[in-house]
Length: 310
Image (cartoon, rainbow, N blue to C red):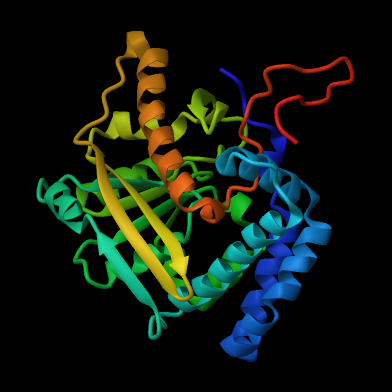
């Protein structure tokens, strides 16, 4: 299996700077001014975030099925910047003025009725924090399994903004991470994780995605298989100004990956996950905020240039 590129675990300097600035601005000056300078933040991102800019062009070329212009990339970055602004408000508990539609919550309640807890598997699509709106109406706590080192400064600032956010994080990089996950599930809690970016040198699985072969981490599926609890796909898509749709759909009552057929089992479940993600990306193309090149080039020239995409 291919391994993710080393750059996947390097905190993105452009994204980190953007996040820090917007958090500081929102808390001290207010949202109207923050919204007014979103175009300037977008321009800054276009000029400085070379890796993210290139990844955006590659992704948009696939999802839009047409030549990509700089305005497309600018719209992608602007949507991301607006989502960061919304994130600050979600984490500070200020939902007033937002319209958040929720679909599929019944499947979460059905899964939790078994008393074994549940895994929520998502992607870098829209806002993970939109899920907090569901938590306000649900009796089930939500823990977040994440690679804390990759999150960097923006997450540390958000932890200061919402201390309970920090308390609910289970750091993948800590040796007791899986014990804490098992304890959370034993308490019939929800454990959320994102499955479209690999931490470190974690093994990845190749799967068809947006017209090419993409590499996504095997870890989330292996964790789900080991724990044997229901797995629900979730997304919090930004559909308009202060508008989100949080959607849940059952992936499996239990993911089974036979040890002797591990590669085949991983490929099958990863295919389900990638098709779900592709449907969301096609419907909301500017909401995927991965900003990493996940595709494996089919051909490399003598100078090492990638011939698969811009």
